[in-house]
Image 1 (spheres, one colour):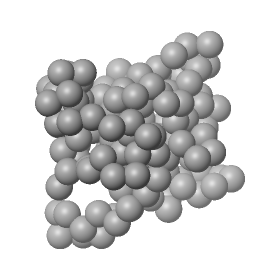
Image 2: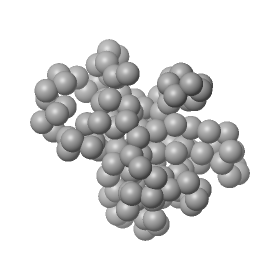
Image 3: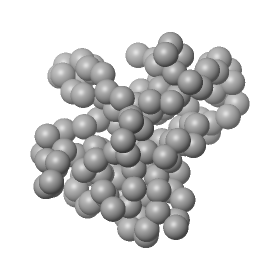
Length: 135
């Protein structure tokens, strides 16, 4: 499964993405990969700041919405308004809701309905798909 450039503000060829991302970022953001749980330092990052897309720099989540889900991936209860889009992911013999950057289409992770109040959502993100900007 790959994300196409259709309907996204940021348009790059596959080669341009390969040149602008690390191999692991390319695998996750452009080929819908998943990093191994517990490998991202962003999972335990609790400083104040903004989490942005590693592909295009768009702000996606704030530190105020981050929580420790215990899953081994950075988790948030809500994205910044209009920062992400979703689609149906039927890979791995299950149906999940995929989350992607609304600006470049990069695969970020999945959203589940088992998060904390007030939203009840758990945006379970691949840390390699994010950069953190401390404020």
